[in-house]
Image (cartoon, rainbow, N blue to C red; front, side, top):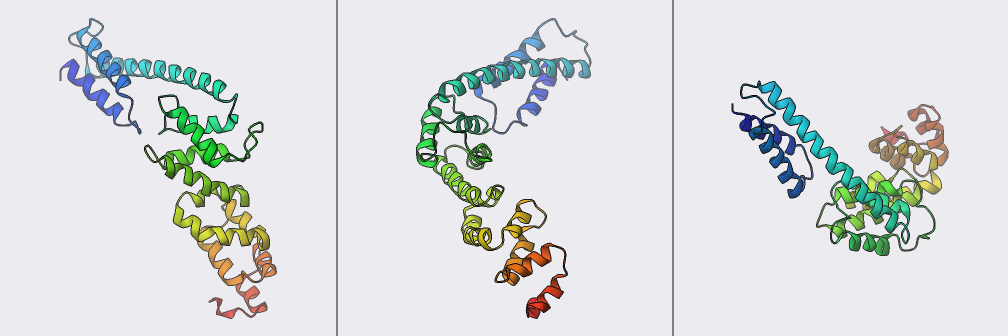
Length: 245
């Protein structure tokens, strides 16, 4: 294979690993670098495939590192500017998103919309509560452009579960799951907080949680005994719940 073929193949392999894709500007810069390397004198005419690939990858990594540094500098300036009027953690959560670019045109408008529509009641002089930065960027990554409303609706759902107990947010990403579990989680927070804590800590899964709730939901003491290690069937006998199976 010719030098240009090897370098172009290498670049295509690198580009396909990016999700979302690199910007057209960065991709164009990378192709230009591969062309310069192919046509320049750094590579001998009889260079091995390994040597060509290694030099090509080194050039690609150099360009990507430069672009990352530029991006980080822009984000830091943007963070400092926007944090003067918005909660620092809100801006950080948005910048952490891999799918949305808040620095480019239109990003600031969307950031302000997230504040106004989702976090408007929060004191802007206080840091956001535990887990809220994660809620923001997970919602944004779940709903890529142009689904602004979907992302904000997801944030609202996750915030509702966050109010019940930190750690439940993962069950609110999908609207159907949120609608199914919202009333149950609220009830459990009052009657079965230990059961809810076990779910949050992933000591039980959602299937076990639902089975416990459906069977023993009216008997908080029974749930506590089971979670403390007593035999489930023996507890069911004590509470006349033999139909448990």
